[in-house]
Picture 1 (cartoon, rainbow, N blue to C red):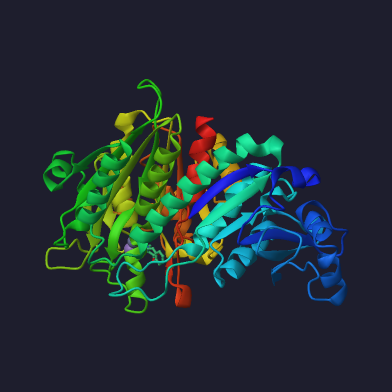
Picture 2 (tube, helix red, strand yellow):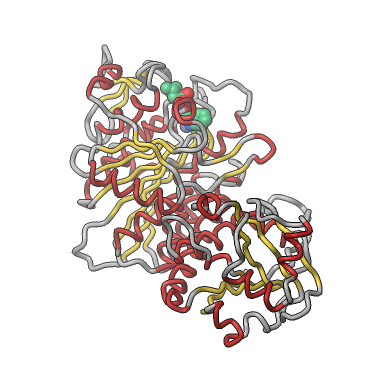
Amino acid sequence: MDFSIKGCDWNKASQNGLLSGKSDCLVVGLFEGQTLSGAVHQVDLATKGLVTRLIKAGDIDGKSGTTLLLHEVHGIGAARVLLVGLGKQDKFNHKAFAEAARAAWRALNGTQVAQVVWTLAQLPVQERDASWAVRSSITTMRELAYKFTQMKSKPETKAAALKKAVISIDPADEKAAKIALKHAVALANGTDLTRDLGNLPANICTPTYLANTAKKMARDWKLKAEVLGQKQLEALKMGSFLSVTRGSVEPVQFIVLHYNGAGAKQAPVVLVGKGVTFDTGGISLKPGDSMDEMKFDMCGAASVLGTMRAIAEIGIKLNVIAVVPACENMPAGNATKPGDIVTSMSGLTIEVLNTDAEGRLILCDALTYVERFKPAAVIDVATLTGACVIALGHHNSGMYSTDDALAGELLDASKEAVDPIWRMPLDQEYHEQLKSNFADLANIGGRPGGSVTAACFLSRFTESYKWAHLDIAGTAWKSGAAKGATGRPVPLLTQFLVDRAA
Ligand code: BES
Ligand code: MN
Ligand code: ZN
């Protein structure tokens, strides 16, 4: 899909050719119960009142989510016009915009339109600028266009007809819109990578597959990849991480991927992603129902790799390091058992009361490892707890931070990227639940506040830097008929890094 930007003042539309120029379809928005303005007004004038007549006839009323495709419209250059209902103008916020954009792209998908002129990014969206509307237009389209077909023996659906979109924008916004386009395409490419890695089955997307993906990214995007194996992790004394991989025959991988967008002196932002390529629960075996979905337990890893792909394509001026501890959590004769005590890289001893609370066991050693980078901030991303899904459902990712400024930055980026997060507590009182009779701490804190105590566990290993944790257990993938990875929180992380670099 090829996107481009074209400046257009609709009051002088005759001068720039968008109304008379040839295209397969002109996409214009229409507010409910309001005099026509902008692009739709010009279409109405050029067609001698066609839109007005259609409204009078009751064929379209501007209700949000509705569309009407018109063919052989006389008076304009485009072969078709797609009228898109926007709802009430005083309610036209980012959600209403995205809904209209989604309805429009869906309507186009059912046609043979190969090339469109898209005017919706010129609409006034509450609390958002033109750059946002350009990004939202593009990412909405790319989200709908995404298909995971790698594992099918033959393609199920024919290739999409739509190949090219010209996004019209007010001339004053043209420069910013071109940057927004580049960002949106890079973000969509990163998100697609994350979705692909998540959707791949665990017999293909192994720890080694993730390591190879990082190495390939390093070649393609001029990043630097290092991968540590069993021996090196033993030398580093990552006893907690290694206790999780014990029962697996797949070799453990510890992936470090560097993006150097700024001077060597600038402290990096470090992203740590949970890379459990399959979580059976280990000896604390999970129930069989939906266990297949535990192939998604590497979505944290996939999201930090996807974010690296996005920022490398944008070329942000910031140093960023992605760190992925990758392994499987399997039961076996030599697997870690409930009650086993392991020594983490930090020296803290951990009583493994439940082998299914493995995410924190691999992350704590990664969080100790990253101290060597003297990071400006560390953000870990993990499908960490079922309890987070109970607390927040599938809309907000859980966000924890010991640093209010960092939390604020993440909340701002979340709002801009429309990738919702909700800040959760880390009060000292919760730490009581992690006490162990035998070791420095236990790896579980009981059922109450299960997502909070998991975050508290991690916080014990992050005292030397600014840290935030994202629990994406409820947001990284969808279950049911639409089963598949969402690519979240790549939009949030990319926006956060872009904002930091600015
Ligand atoms: N990967 C799971 C968390 C998970 C479960 C995410 C279901 C999404 C859906 C994690 O490793 C896990 O098993 N956590 C346990 C922790 C418990 C044993 C304290 C959980 O949430 O049940
Ligand atoms: Mn688990
Ligand atoms: Zn897990």
